[in-house]
Image 1 (cartoon, one colour):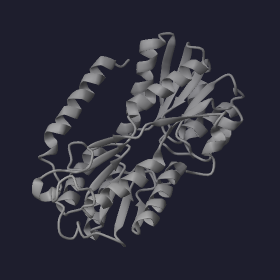
Image 2 (cartoon, rainbow, N blue to C red):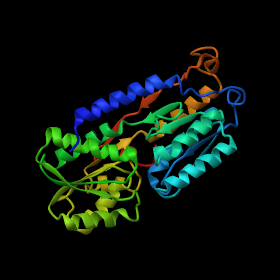
Image 3 (tube, rainbow, N blue to C red):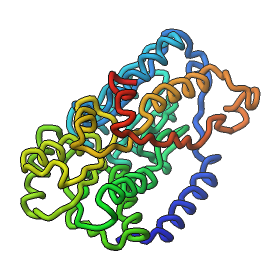
Length: 333
C-alpha cells in the first residue's frame, strides 16, 4: 500500500526542485520563434493514438487553430511505442514547427529530445504527463494521483466501502500515479477494501476485454473494478456483461471516451473520472503562441531577461461523469 505522507513529501520536493531549476532551464526564444504568427504550426505528439480518448484533444487543437489562425497537427505512434515516439520527436524537431505539445509515453526517453527542441527555439508544453527535468515551458493536466483518489472514492461508495477490487491500467507513469491514488484512498478510509490484482489492459480496446475477463475468472468474488486509463472502462464493462455480472461488479471508469459513455447510461458503469482534455490542448496552443509572439508583457523581452513568462504548471482538474449528467458529455467537447 502507498504511504500518502511520503508521496506528499516527494511531490513537495519535486515542486521545489522544479522551481529552483526553472531559471536554469529557460528556453531561448527569439528571432523566428517570436515572429511566429498566422500559419505557424503547433504539433501535438502523443502515444497510443489509435484510441478514442484523444478525440477531445483533437477538438481543442482544431478550435485553437481557428481562433488563432494557425495550423495544428496531431500525431504519434498508434500503440504504446515509446521508442517510436522518441524517434518521431526528433523528426518533428527537424521540421521546426512553432511549438510542440507532448504526452510522454516514457519521460526518460523524451527528455533529451525535448531539450533539443527548446534549444532549437521550439517551445514545448507537456500534456497529462510531465518531464520536469527537461527544458519544457509548461505542464498542463490533472494531478494524476488526485484523480486516482477521486476514482477510489467513487468506487468505494459504489461497493459499500468493502470488498475485493481490481484496478486497470497500463505502464505509463502518469497512469500508474492514478493507481496509487486509488490505493491511498482505500488505505486511509476504507481498510476493508482489498486490491487483489492490478490488470495491465495495455490501453488497447481490442485486448482490454480479455484482460478483465481473465482477471474476473481468477477472482470471481470481486466487487468492483477501477479503471485508470481511457480504455479500461469499456473493456471492464464488456467483460462484466460477458460474465453475467452486471450490477454485481461495480465499475468506475476513466475519461469520457465516446464508446464508453453508453455503458454509463445503461448502468453497467457507475461513473467515470474525466480529464478536461479539450482545455489542455486548446489552452496549450494559446500559451505557446502567446509566448512565440511575445503577447504576454510580463517583461518587454523575456529572452533577454532570462525568464519564462508562462506558468510552470497548470492543474486542469477532473469532472465526474455519472448517469445524471452523461448526456452532456456525448458528442465530444
